[in-house]
Image 1 (tube, rainbow, N blue to C red):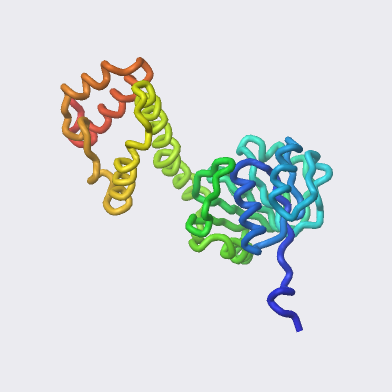
Image 2: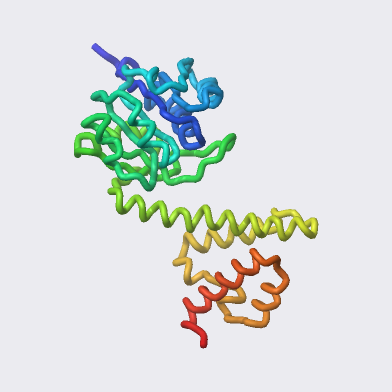
Length: 267
């Protein structure tokens, strides 16, 4: 009679060694969702660095040497490298997953009849730990049976799993770029402005936290404040004219759009 400890854990090959691949590989091992048996990367040093954090000793920078014995192949590469890399790998009957928010699921259709998407909605940076149990995983499968299989694999890592087709997932990715990537760029500008006067960036901490708390508790539009929300042209002009050309252009464009959103186009 088998026990839970004897139940087969899927063997996983991770194709990629970047931030997303690294976070997922570690989570797969730590959660018991599977056993990572090999890391592929075009940069063998990156593959070895990731493998050193796991119980995985096998690494390769050759697509010809990717193991054919895995149950799951997790493709976590830059979007523009996926098709080229897959073309060099032999198909099999395993479960193939990619982690992209913008690639269509069918990019994997030539690898197996069982394929899908395993997309965690989060920002990942090297050497920064992320609690994936609090992250939403968006999935899609080539059939309902595959969708269910992906969910069973993911539920050991993620508490919240949502099915999303390619159109919905792409829209989600765009929203995430606005909410995360563009916001972080604004913070980077603020950091540079403060640094010029020797002011630590963390003075903005309470402001940033309150802004996020408001955005999560009410529609963000209702929480909009600032000179552009009031259409205070005097302050807007004073701010904009004090900035370097690139930052001035961004400030004026955003202010113009906020004013038009609340007050309509100005003559």
